[in-house]
Image 1 (spheres, one colour):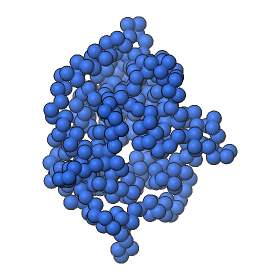
Image 2: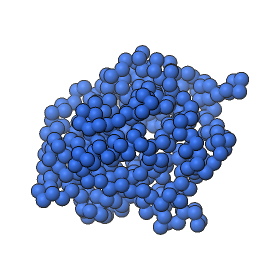
Image 3: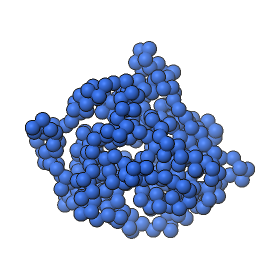
Image 4: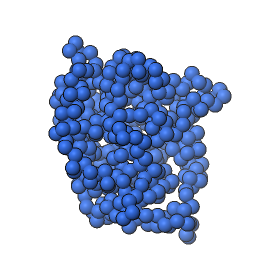
Length: 372
């Protein structure tokens, strides 16, 4: 059994997939965060302004797609594009598994401010089958959703001839992972989408009469020739502007009636403003805790430490209090969605526990190397 190491700057363990640590115990997300302090952000802004200038619509047609959940990050991007840079973005949403009231409210507030919106909801018979399958196989009920949220915005951009797509941040750079090439932080790469976001080609999901190839259209990224022919460019907004989930929340709540979690914090963490729109997220992040030994509170605290909004000591206290909290609030809704009993669900949860991370004592699962 190997020792689990925790970053000495933030709280992230080396069990996070693809993360790298320096010789003195600092994760590559913290190295990146330190590097952001030396970036000439005025120069990056000028680069952005020069990039969008030839694409800015003169006729009122859409000139950019924003993959949009209605959350703080994508809403901040859309707002800045429209009201700070004079663009006309089309907001594209791949539906949450289980939409909720706060997500619906926040989306409606943005639309009332003057945005056009495409909301895509896939065949629920197929989508629920895939969620059930991947919860069992990978401990992740949102694998198909991951594919759809990557594919549909690009499909819309190609189909409507919209030249730019602005995603939020490059997660492998911003939060610790494997950076495939020099421009990974700026340009969204299809190979990386398959490798890091989805895990395989959705065409592999054909499953007899349950899932036919024709059922997988919502999850298929457009072919490279189609993208090249229309000239669509998929970019990360965080390359051009300093990225912080906390500051994005502050930005958008000053502009619309952006509602936080109605109970004051989201289950499993101390924040009330992140990943608010899907009831399935509580189980999704709990499974992250089960598989990798860190949950939503460690994730949120680490991001806020990296951007200077918490000290490590403050983050450690909050994470110890909330990380790994059982997702009881929406569990019944998820069980109905996945067509399984609570007993079946808990059995699957335990099947995904890594024995290098977990041990059972007195009938209870505990981390072999607790957060420190």
